[in-house]
Length: 87
Image (cartoon, rainbow, N blue to C red; front, top):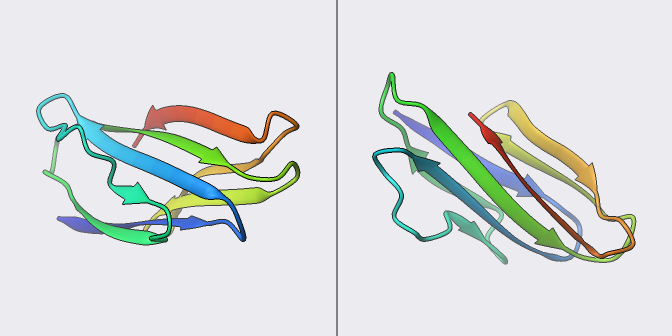
């Protein structure tokens, strides 16, 4: 099944990676300046994601998979935000 990975961020740079135990290409799936990418998933398999964004303090960002919000955040004074999670 295919889903759309999307980031909404008015300015800055980003990298987002989606992976599973059995399938990690080692390449990021969504890299600035692209704001969306189509990702293939195998039904019944667990997936994770990791992200790194940078920009000016106070910049808000949202990472979504189709209509599901994976992350909503705001960049702090370090001017970076990183994280991971399970899809």
